[in-house]
Length: 350
Ligand code: SF4
Image (tube, rainbow, N blue to C red; front, side, top):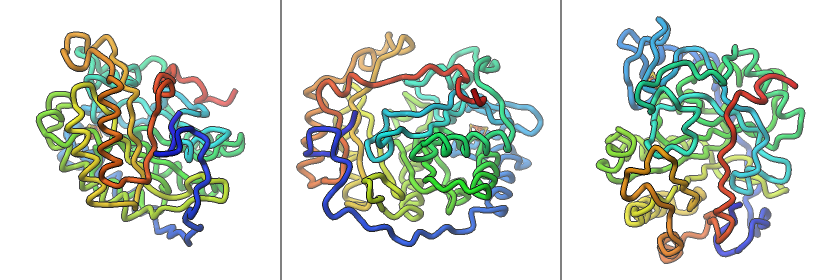
């Protein structure tokens, strides 16, 4: 459970002075965008959908660093109550967890769905993720709305971007009306994000590293800080903040800062950068839910949880900067961190 900074509980969905509904640009987000992202995926030099630009020839059956071939694979579809309150609301966010990940952090909290990208000797099929067609993906989006989801929450979808764009267009043509949330590690290329303009309403993005050395050590991505800064600028361009009368976000960007043990200074520098660059044009979400998994037990820092003192220092830093639009995880609430089972459940209609 996350609460807004200063409220102390998770119930503060409404907010005084919440932005009225703006007229939202829907932009083209159409055939041209899908064609552009397809071209990125099938470039002669190989896939460049994410900043990794690993060059895999996915159309020919190769897998990229993300561990995935061309056909989308979904590890889980479910209603999720564990996002920020303005996303989960009272009924839940309609979450679609895609298999694979271009970032592949060594401490990944969703490790079972990124096998192939980070597990040595990986690359095998994810037996429990289900492959879907564009039309089947569109069906999932429409079904989630029909069943009452507040929004469609696409978790780590970039490596399947051409299919995701086509599926969103199909679903919107069938009347999909709830906001679309793009839930990402922040390791995105501006070109891919531009292809989503007009199709995505909310970016729910991590900002993991400010130091290229940390990004290299934990995610083999020393370019992460530069990529994340560029990506965030494009996200902000697309999504002015707005909320519905029920307090749920209808457009905007939420930047998650996952505090890693022993990395308070780096997390503080991320918060400083974001606040100094964007002020109150976005929401920050300060996460203390890091959970050490068996893969990092030999790492002297990552093998433990974040301490209360470390997290308090991060929150105090945000307060000292004058941050007011932020979500925090308080006390026992952080223990509610929830790593779902990724076994393909929910992909097919039950
Ligand atoms: S999306 Fe996957 S295949 Fe494409 S560049 Fe990134 S890691 Fe490589």
